Structure formats: C-alpha cells, structure tokens
Length: 185
Image 1 (cartoon, rainbow, N blue to C red):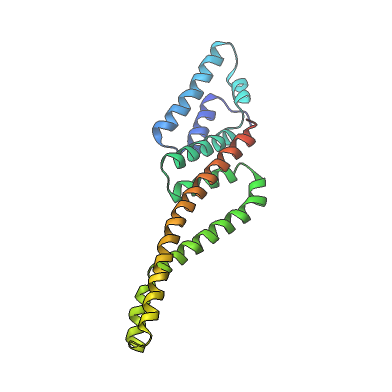
Image 2 (cartoon, rainbow, N blue to C red):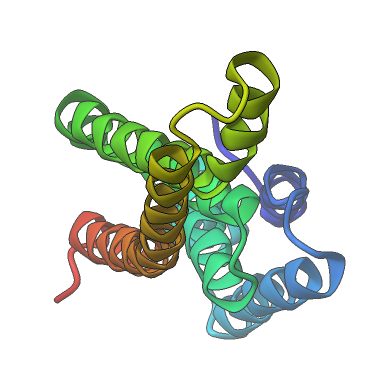
C-alpha cells in the first residue's frame, strides 16, 4: 500500500499518541520538513515515503528512544517498565533469551527487599512474644530482635543501592539494545 505525505504523517501521529504532545509535534515537524525539502528537490511524495520507510517501524524506534529518555530523566518503576516493553517490541531475541533472567533477577531483588523490611520490623515480634510467653528468656529475645533489626536496616540500605544499580544497568542494556537493533555503535 502506497502512502502519500498526509497519510504517512497521520499514521505516524496516531502511532506516537503516547508521546507528549510537544515532543510529538516536534517529531512530526521534522518529518514534514523532510517532505518539504524532498518535494523542493523534485521527488514525489511516494518516493519520500519509501525513503523514510514504514511508519510503524519508525514509531517503534521513536517510542523506544522516547521511553528510555523519559526513564533516564524521571526514575520510576512505571517509566522503566515502559522502556523495557518498548525495547522488547524491537527484538525477538530479547523475548526469548533475556526475559527469563530479568524476571529472575528482579524476583530475587524483590524477595530480598521484603526480607529486609521483615527483619527491620522484627522487634515488634518481641512484643507478641512477651504477650504470649511472658518475660521468659526476654534478654535473649531482646538482643536477638535488636540484632535482626540492625541486620534489616543494613540490608535495606544495601537493597537501595542494589536497586539503583539494577535500574542503571537495565537502562544501559536497553540503550545498548536499541543501538544494536538500529545498527549503530
């Protein structure tokens, strides 16, 4: 199916609906400018559309770049999730070989975070122990709960640093993947 300039731009605009309006308008302006220059050089709209390629492929690339940039600026789980999905949509390899290990790593990370929180609030269990067992072995239980709480606090601090590291490594991998798919260096 051959597209003309308006059909190409309308399709691209529709596919980029998730991009912020000002960014989307800037992208569309760049393509409009490309058409204007090409038409001024004597090329037809159909030739220019063929030069540019499929709007769906262009939109996937642009969305992946946009979401990675957004994840870099606004570090949140939602933005990271969108960047990962955008990258996976670009490559079958990612779906087959990377999803399993990524889910495993983030699953272990989540389990360790939950463990650190549970250890941190473990002194509350001392209160329950006193309520049900009285003050028998209170010294041992008291020092054990303080030790576990300290371990939980240290583990929580470590998990914060590991979380930042995983976030940055994931972003670097996504950027590397996009460059590889596009044939860059």
